[in-house]
Structure formats: structure tokens, C-alpha cells
Image (cartoon, rainbow, N blue to C red):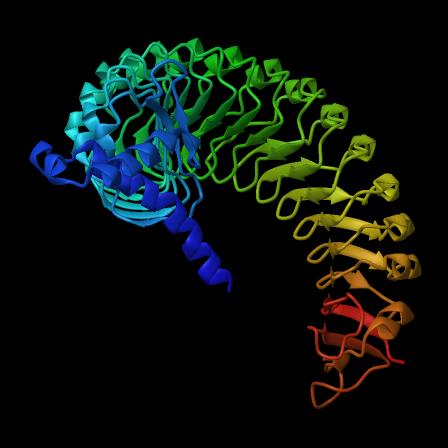
Amino acid sequence: MFAWAKLRMKMVIMLPLLLFFSLSTLPTHIAKLSNYSDQQALIAFKDALCNWTGVVCSSRRQRVVSLNLTGMGLAGPISPFLANLSFLRVLDLKHNSFQGHIPYQLGRLFRLRWLRFSYNNLSGSIPSEFSLLSNLKVMALVQNNLTGIIPPFLGNMSSLTVIDLGGNRFQGSIPHVLGMLSQLKWLDLCMNNLIGPIPVSLSNCTRLQELELCGNHLSGPIPWEFGRLSQLQHVYLWKNQLSGEIPSSVGNWTQLQMLDFANNKLSGTVPKEFGKMQQLRSLVLSLNHLTGVLPTSIGRLSNSLSVLSLNSNEIGGNIPDEIGNLTMLSSLDLKKNRFNGTIPSALCRLPNLEGLNLHTNNLHGRIPECFGQSKRLGLLSLSQNILSGQIPQGLGALPQLRRLDLSHNQLSGKIPASLGKCKTLELVDMAHNKLTGNIPSWVLFQCFWEFTAGFYFGNEPNGYGFSYRCFSKQFLGWHSQCTGKLQGVNVSKSFWECI
């Protein structure tokens, strides 16, 4: 029934359009042979087209100026007869299943302002006839299967404010002539197969607010001249092969809200000029070759920053206390760097912190007791450091803690019984420490676990023997017979009293 209803909807939409296009192109000699009453009935039907779904007509001439068939479940090729709607200003066919090439005849729609064919299955290249669309402001063809190059003629379409071509299979380089588009506010070329450098000429597009070039094979540096783009709000350059230092001129991006340079080959230090970005909500520089220390100016982003990700770089020195000023921070990811010193207790001043990932650094000292105050903390990963001392009892006061990884440190003492109060725990890893004492009862009560006591290689004549203080090789559980939320516990390579 649902499929039949959907088919009827398509017929209701498409039948009037087909009739309209037929009447618009009806040869004169055929019209003369038609029955007069039938002809008048069809003309009357045609006159009602301004009430059809998705159709908007001008008030004076009653000509179609907008056709919006978004998400109608339509398929097949786009009809070239749409080019007969000579007064059309908006053509929106996004979120359908249209396939085949884009009709070149649409280049005759010289009044067209908005062209949106996003989220279809269109193939082929952008027709060269589109260079005639001199009044076009928005070209959105994202998420199709379009190929070829980014047409250089786009640089001559001076009215363009939005170019959204992401999620296709375009090749070649980014045309430098795009820098001639003084009205351009949005440029999305993400997830294509583009190569070469980022054109310096794009710095002339001073009204640009959105710059998305991610998921390509772009190389070379981030142009220093991009500092002129003071109205930028979102910049996504992740997953390319960009190299060189992050230019200090980015400090002029005072309106920036989202910045993602992850997964490139960027080197040098984290610019202290980031501290000027008072509107920044997300800063992601992961998977690069950044060195030096993290500047204390990062703490000036306290009004807005919620995500700070610098993982998988070579940043060293102490973790700045100033990070504690980032009161809106929800995710802090500094894993796989060279940070040393102790974990600053200033991190306890982050009331919205949900994820803290510091694993694989050179941090030493104790785990701050005050972490128990971070009531929203759901992920705490401190593994592969040189942390010592006991596990804080205060961690048991974290009502939303789901994953706790303290493995590969030098922690000693007992596992806190207070962790049994963390009813949301899904994974606990404390392997490769110096923990002692009994296996906590809260672990055994939450799930039935397999416990294998390994051999303790002592000083017996035969080279090995059992000991009252057993060396546990494995204490793991993965869903097996668990009835609660706890999915995994690993406390291997520690010392336990046999019970």
C-alpha cells in the first residue's frame, strides 16, 4: 500500500508537468486538427499549473518562476524540456534519484538564479553551456557522480555566491580563476580527486564564509594570503597532503567557528594567534607533524571552544594550565604526542568535559583526585604514560563514566571499590600496572568473567611454580554472559592475591 501511494504521488506530480511541456511544444498543424472542446479542456488544465505542487508562478504574467521537487522520490533522466520554462529563476531537484547527464539545454535559462541538483545519481561533466547562466547565484551539485574538471568558466560567472560541488569525482586542479568571484561566500569542493596547490587567488574572495576543500589530494602550503579572508566562519582542509607551517595570518579569522586541518603533513608549531579566534567552537589539528609546545594563548578561547583535538602530532612540553579556562570544552584529545610533566589539576575546572584522551604521552605523577568533580566525564583515557600512585577514589563519583583506560602505567595499590558506583561503565582497562589486592567484588557481581591465573616464574629449582601472589595474564570479558552494561575488563599484567 505504501509503495502504491508513493507511485500515485509521483504520477500526480509528473503527469501535469508532462502535459504542460507537451502543450508548450505542441506543433501548430496538430493543434488545428484537435477537437476544439478537448483543446479547451487541456488549456484550462494548463492554466491551473500555478497551483501544482512545487510550482511557483509570477503574480503578473503567471509564468513559472520556481520549480521545487525536492525529495519527491523521482528517478530517471532530467528532462531537457525544462529549458522551455524560460522565466525560471529557481530549479531545485535535490534529494531524488535522477540519473544520467545534466541536460545542456538548461544553459538557455538565462534568468536562473538557483540551481540545486544535489543528492542524486547524476553523471558526466558540468555542461559548458552553463557558462551562459550569467545571473546564477547558487550552483549546488553535491553528492552525485559527476566527473571531469572543475570548469574554469565558473570564474566568469560573477554573480555566483555558492559553489557546492562536494562528493563527486572531479579531477584536476582548482581553477585559479575562481579568485575572480568577488561575491563568493561558499566554496565546497570536498571529497573529490583534486590535486595541486590551493590557489593563492582565492584570497581575493574576501566575502568567503565557508571554505571546504577536504578529502582531496591537494598539496603545498596553506597560503599566507588567506589571512585576508576575515569573514571566514568554517574552514575544512582535512585529509589532503598539505605541508609547511600553519600561517600566523590565520589570526585574522576572528569570525571563525570551525577549523579542521587534520590528516595532512603540516609542520611547525601551533600558532599563538589561534588565541584571537574568540568565536571558535572546534579546533582540530590531528594527524600532522606539529612540534613545539602548546601556546598558553589557547586559553583565550574560553567563550566558545567545545572541541580541541591535537592528537597524533609531536607536541611536547607541559599541558598548559590555561586550558582550564575553556569552560565550554567538551572534548580534549591530546593523545599520541610528547607531552610531559604532570596532568594539570586545572582540567578539573572544565564543567562540560565529556571526553579526556591523554594516552601515549610522557606524563608522570599522580592522577588528579579532583577528576571526581567532572560529572559529565564519559571517557577517560590515560594509558601508556608514566603515571604512578593510586587510582583516585573520586573516579567512582562520575555518574556518566563509560570507558576508563589506565593501562600501561606504574599505578599501584588497589582498584577503588568506589568504581562499582559507576553503573554506566562499558570498558575498564588497567592492564600493565603494579596493582595489588583482591579482584573487586563489583566486577564479579556485574558479570560472570573468565579469570585465568597465569604462572609466576619464581626461584623454584625447576624454574617456575605457583605463588600465593599470582601473576594474572588475563582477566577479560567481552559480552559473554554479561547482563549489565559492562562489556570489557582488562586488569592483566598486575599482581593479585589469589582468592
